[in-house]
Picture 1 (cartoon, rainbow, N blue to C red):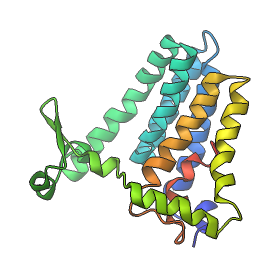
Picture 2 (picture 1 turned 120 degrees about the vertical axis):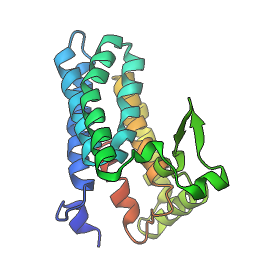
Picture 3 (picture 1 turned 90 degrees about the vertical axis):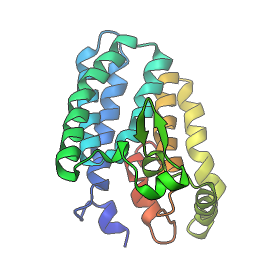
Length: 212
């Protein structure tokens, strides 16, 4: 069930997302050099394209944000943000024209009744739709790792050990990789649709495979 998705042999967006996000991350790393504004613009453009392919890839934006803050590359961060904007505007227009509304700014009546959504600056924001955090589901998935590997703790510790090792060479890049991985593993991995046993967990976190 999982291999066709992992090899990109389906029409789903997860494999293309992994490729585009990886290239965007590579340009983010290059843009950390002083004066590398062209690389920052390419990184922002690619990140926007990844979000256009699959809006959930907005989770990746946590990675360049952490990298630019730790590297104190404020101008590169501004260039990245400006290059990102056209894709976000295009996505918003496409959603509004195709669906009649922008899903991120709209919530169903059931959410109104349950008071799940929260108004931000007078705009209703459907947080649960894009941040489906379910701690119990995430704990269950982490526990189920041991059913498919001889040590769940090793799988969980390996990226943390790698982060510490990489920090000896570059703290910004280390922080970027950790933020990239955690954004997908925690947010998408805690969704009720994510399951280790069915393989859906791996599909949902696939854009962060390279970070792992």
